[in-house]
Length: 117
Length: 139
Length: 293
Image 1 (cartoon, rainbow over the protein chains, first blue to last red):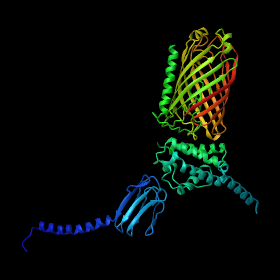
Image 2 (cartoon, rainbow over the protein chains, first blue to last red):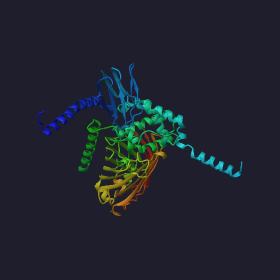
Image 3 (spheres, chains in turn red, purple, orange):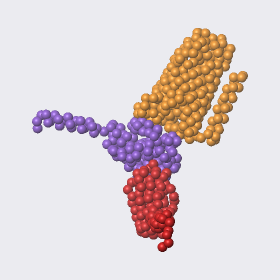
Image 4 (cartoon, helix red, strand yellow):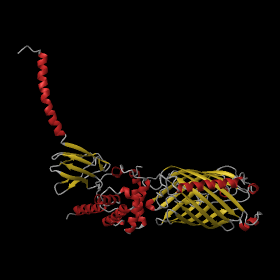
């Protein structure tokens, strides 16, 4: 092998590590993007509807001054949370595809439409 | 039984009775059944009062009623334990005006009328509730 | 003539103001609780029948305005006293009032050399400012609701007033009032201290040959609420005694006030206004009607 500048060799070795980093980083991003935070404030969800993939998790973050108690009630999927005090987060993973409405037992006007693909 | 034990038992019995003696206001309001009736009447009015439509359109009555009754019971000196949020916490984001606070008071008065509470008992309860205006009215 | 014109202008301004308010120029909500604005006293301010209270007239909440018109008649042994007025309350903080009073001497007018049915008139323009405290909500404190006020008064019959020794036909009364509602006891208490030179409320001018300085007068009211709509009470109002020609004394009343709604209230009372113009102590029925929002 022709003589290669040690600096270049070092760069090449680091580059391999850097190249290896990217797929790992992409996997990490993919893992992170499989969960989304939904804020609860002013007795409402911050958004009205969301589309997610099967198996994804929604984290409901109570940034309201009020206690909430979210639930989902459909033939394919049900979920009941305990009372969720201000500051608490409730996580819901959606294992099946379909259309699901998230409600609050305490505040009847709160609704989030979740479309699971 | 030895005399000293009898005396001790009598003192304990009397002090327990005194400690758990109901606040006269709680008794005069009809005790727990009276408070329940007043709460039910009041919520009937709140949820149907057109002046209060925007204040009660996003709260589940089944959640509110037991807490409302527990709070009234507690403030009337009854043996209930109120574990909910303070009046300040539970109202601070609702932008309640003095006028809507007063409409709630008026509906509570009508609720007590319907429950047969005499006027001079009503004023004693209202006297304990009136200072809450400072915590509840934020606009 | 000038004085009569000015009182007509005053009346017109207040009436127009009330009309503007009632047509939505300002917020109007009738948001205060029934009976918590009192009625109107003879000089037009919000309060009892004889004395101004710290309460701001009208049913407007702190976010709105309220107002009313009132008519009062007092039938005395030898005289008749009437009052017509209007008052407006702004944001539960500030009050303006106007009243026009007439004092009919009846046959006593003849005895006094004025002629039977001779009338005296008094215009009162009032302003009141609530300083602090809330009589309704401060149930957990001894602090009363406190207000200060002024009543600008102008009497007519200048020549007669001069003849009886009055120093001036116009005057200013200043007062401070403290009102406390003890809701648990269904009791309302008021104490007012007034600095005044008025003779017979101002009907016989201000200051006199006996005294021509301001004096502090005391006015007290106590009312018991029998129900949400009905109050029984009594008042006392001391008066200066400035004129040499006739003694003047303390006024008292015992009243019953009925609040039919936030729009209408009526007050019936029995009053004693003390001795007036050498005709002896004057007592009789008092009737007042208030219509407002």
